[in-house]
Every structure is written in structure tokens, then in C-alpha cells.
Length: 236
Image (tube, rainbow, N blue to C red; front, side):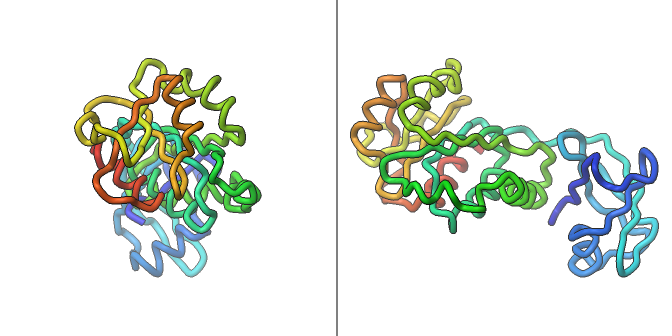
């Protein structure tokens, strides 16, 4: 945890003092081993970053005086469209998206996505929020990515994809493409990543009809989580 992420629902004593009693307080005590008078990096969810000076600390709580004034880091140039991954990958993927600072992640259904994945408790708002916040704490960010769920592929591509792209390039990752993503990753764009096994031909054709263009990520076939990291790393 490289930043203590605060929010308006915390126990604020006044406009500058906040009392923490949850996992953040435990992390400050047991991992950071902070003491009274120590200064920590903090940030307000959706707002600025700054410092928090510990006024008191005990076995149950941490009281800090907070001063904010620094802007959050810049957002990533890519928005993402990702075939819903296996539940065991989802938490890690959400953290990665938050660490890189992507603004939007669109989770979609495709032919090779098992419909049971949509029933995973890890897709609940609370679990998604928890995973995203963990990524934000690691990367010292305060702006939470927006996660959108789309259970029908064709309506998403035909009705939503043009709106999402809004004039930006739309790249779709495919092993047989002639253009490498790293060669075109110089401007804001939307990048589509398929499931294990990739998009089926119908899905590729439909996406291309709506303006998507194929790009490849290199000479190797990558797992979904590695492909996601590779895509995001192209535009740092």
C-alpha cells in the first residue's frame, strides 16, 4: 500500500482530521509500522493527493491530520474492451487496470466465454471496488476506473462500440495482424482483447465492420492477463 486511500464516508473529526479503524489502520500499524508523528502519503477518492500526519495510534485506530493539494497521476491513453476472463484471473486483472490508470474497462461476453463466469461473486460491485482500490493504493492513484458489463456481444459491438470509440482508433488484438500495437500506440485509443483462444471469425468480422483494426502484440501467444499487461505497457 503506497497510498492511504480516503473517502468521504470515513470518520472525519473535522475537515482535516480522519480516524481510521479498518484494514488501512491495521496496515499502518503492522506493515508500515508507523508511529505518532510519522507522515504518510494519502489521497481522497476521486480527488487530490497529499500527506497525512499521524496524531495518535493505538491497537484499534489511527488518527491523522490530512493536507491535500497534489493532482492525481495522468490517466492511461487506452480504454479497454476485454472478454470476461476466468474468475480466478478477474481480481488480478482489475488490480492491473487500476495500477495502470485506465479510465474505462468494458467486460464483454464472447463465444469462448463460459456463461457461468457472469455468476461469479467476484463480479459484485463490492468485490470489483475492492480489487480496484487495491490497485490504486499500489500506484498512488485516486481516480477509480469505471467497469462496465456487457452480456451480449453483438448489441455491444453494433450499438456501444462506436460510441465508446468516439473518433479514437479501435484496435483489436489478433495474432495474425500485420501491424504491431507498439507501432501505433501513440494516441488515445480503445483496445479490444479476446478470451483464451481469441475472438471467433464472426466476432472479428463484426468488430471490423464497426471500425476496429487488427493489431498484434508480438510473436508469442499470450494468456489474457499477460496480454492485458502488454497492451497497457505499450502506452506508458
